[in-house]
Structure formats: structure tokens, C-alpha cells
Length: 179
Image (cartoon, rainbow, N blue to C red; front, side, top):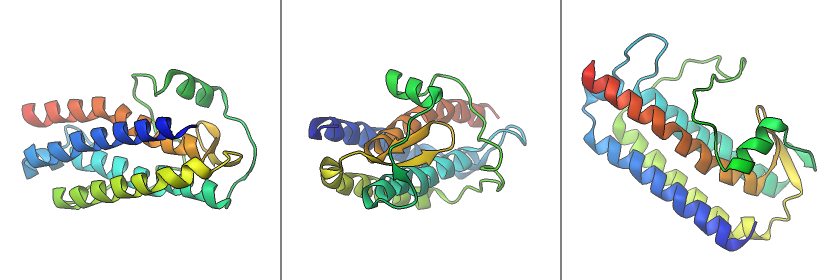
């Protein structure tokens, strides 16, 4: 992946997280923690998922690949992974977290925590651009749904995953307003 693509991915990621950050300034505490049903996340839980997966999954695996640890040289994406990257994002549908990965209930925190989390994610993502430009892309770690991804693919997946949750964000905002 060339430098322009990485800069473009970063710009998209930064713009997406600006949308999330701006949302935090608009929600009341009641709306932020509102759950329309036991099975439906609150906005707080969705923010926790987006931020936690951004730092501890997507950016962490980007770094692991660049450091060549906890993975392997080579490996292929599966059919789902090929499609996600071919079309540049996830299909507009709801997904269930794979069994075993959702053992703990996601607990949302105060809105101020996510303002800090978003800033940390943006800073980390920006600092990774230059090292990613030097990465040959041969070392990969396993994504439980998409198959083997290299550092640049993990980095791009941060943007795709964050964008995917915008639809859920809008749905949860509407539920909170009407609940």
C-alpha cells in the first residue's frame, strides 16, 4: 500500500472519529446509557466497542505485524476477508460477535472517557503511517472472521469497522431520543 493510500485511510479514520467525538458533545447522560432492550447496546456500549476494538484489536494487530510477533509470514484472507477488502467495507447488515469473543458484557463509561480514547486512537493511527510505509506486508496475524491480514490491512480495517458502526450509532441515537 503506498503512502497516499495510508494518508487517505488516516484522513477517513480521523473524519469518522470526529463524527463520534461530536456525538459525545450532544448526548445527555440518560441518552448515552439508554438501552431499548436487554439485547440492544446503549450508545455507551457501542462507543466502548468501537474504541476498545480500535486500540486493542485493529491498531494492536497493525503493530504486531510490523513487529513480526504473534503471527506468521504469509497466509490468506478467507472469502469474507476477500469480499470486505474488495468492496472496501462491511456489508450494510448487523453482525454478531463470534462465539468466544463476546464472553464479557461490554460496559460503557462516561462520555469524557471516550473523548480521550478517540484522541489516543487518532494519535496512534497517525504515528503508524510512516512505519507502515516501510513495512513489506508479508507478516500477518489472524483475524477471527476475515483470515490472515498484514499490517496495512489491519490499519485499513480500523477505518472500515469504525465506518460500519455509524449506522448502528444512528439507530441507537434514534432509540434513545424516542425511548
